[in-house]
Length: 269
Image (cartoon, rainbow, N blue to C red; front, side, top):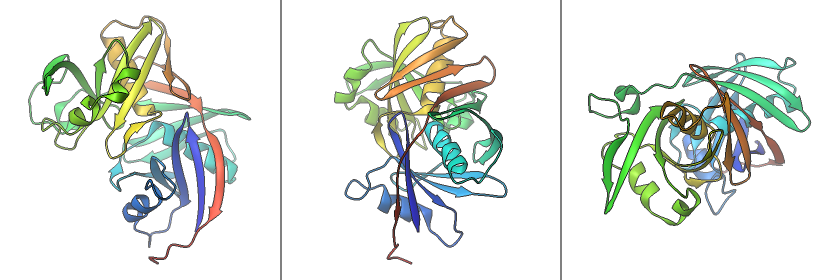
């Protein structure tokens, strides 16, 4: 089996060609483990049509991954699986349109779809949307807004997003009983009316260097709350920036980097 490692702003993945005989949940738990390759996720690349099948570090499957789909786009171009610069990728969150803007250094634009505040999409049982809802996490009262943006996200505005990395709030909110399928948690710091700092606790992964769908969710909620007034926003992550734009349909633009390729034998086969 050929393994290929890519990263998007530090969010790293193992990419493999799809094989219907492979248990990708088990493979993700093995390859992404801290004592193995220690990556954020596993992406199986299916062709005819192009499809991204994504698994988190813990083996759980997620509908979409923003940084992952940019890595997917670079992989299919690197492997000459496509010739065109505009193409569509099938995901569990629907068909996603991708445009490769630049090949060296690699940079692409992804139409991420429309945000959805519907409670059923968030796998919560309450009737009203979660918009500026108060919730206690131990002795801390938070104001949260949750939105489905390719996957389930919760946004919390804070004065210092980086400081949250030393706290347990992200993990506890991720696993709160309100969210039956857990939630990704995005701590968002407003820099000005066109810049945000985002740090994400990702379900099935933990703290991650970047989360593309999380940046989109942060942008949507910040825009809806009146914190952003420009046509697009720069979202600062630990190892790079993403540009998020759009009103109804959200677009993400950012890089993807190739790291290595290895031949590996799965001893479970």
